[in-house]
Amino acid sequence: MLKGKKIVLGITGSIAAYKACYIIRGLVKAGAEVQVVITPAGKEFITPITLSALTQKPVVSEFFSQRDGTWNSHVKLGLWADAMLIAPCTASTLGKMANGIADNMLITTYLSMKAPVFVAPAMDLDMYQHPTTQENMQRLLSFGNYIIEPQSGFLASGLEGKGRMEEPENIVAYLDNFFEPKDLQGKKILITAGPTYEKIDPVRFLGNYSSGKMGFALAEECARRGAEVTLIAGPVNSQLAIGCWSTAVQRINVESCQEMYDAATKHFPQCDAAILCAAVADFRPEHTADQKIKRKDDDLVIRLKPNPDIAARLGEMKRNGQVLVGFALETNDEQANAQHKLEKKNLDFIVLNSLRNEGTCFRSDENQVSIISRNGQHDYDRKPKQDVARDIIDELASLIS
Image (cartoon, rainbow, N blue to C red; front, side, top):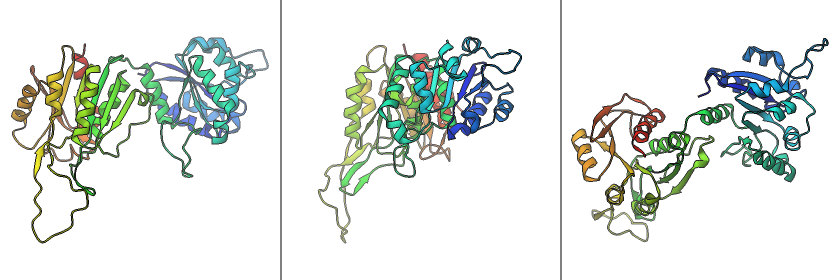
């Protein structure tokens, strides 16, 4: 969504200034037009010639570019831009922005800016944590600016990576998401993801190979398109991708089918739609041992009993206007089994994938699905799970009221 957008990129005197090159490259690749405004201190870390070569525009730094009276108009830049991004932004520039100290071209451009302003702080941890810096950041937020910071991650020292500048690709994704139309704005979506583990004893369980990647991709796609997401995740190592949409996802961690059932039935009534992507165990041990079961000469027999059916229960609870999406992972008679599940569990559509398609489904970064509804079937090519998520949410968005 950055195609044709005009971006003013402000660069300040930080060691992270070299990363501005990667930001420019990402913005230009996405179709944006970039005009760099750099502080005098910023030029100590990266040369205007390098930046100009990447943007195909002269870099603006001083008020007057020539001795003949030619000057750079911060007012025109403020009217020209669709957005202003300051990355990296030092503690000094943060303070000047928060207090209106217009002593360089970058700050005067900021004060004249009519478009949204995005700030990616870059400083050491002590400076970042100082009360003055925190107060300045809160003031910028109160002015309607946007702060782009890492949502997670740790430095090699073990300290949380606050203060470091967000990675260039995530900054570009932040801006891209900002300009993308939000067809799910204001909608609340429930998503289940990953496996469930059913305990045999304190160290063993029944489970499956689900990684949660498909469910997490769906959560990211929904949030990116404006939805508030409740993500009920089984025991997986998957993490949400860093981005401006990650704060729109409320993650609830569970382990067993019963825990997922309880969470899903609790939150579904407040939601506009639910996508049941989790690979839930159909059975659990009838009895769970309190202590580790020791090896014996005799065979070990574990009696299983059925778990509650989350999809069936939500299908019973579904009210008019709600949309319920299921998943079917099959090994044989795929279409017939999926169609039966669609009708039996009162689903609006079902996403079918098959273990016959090698390199998809469990643990894979790719998937190949068919979407089956009461209106027919649409088969899709094999593609990354992020793209599969987009196809699924396109179908959801066409149904949600």
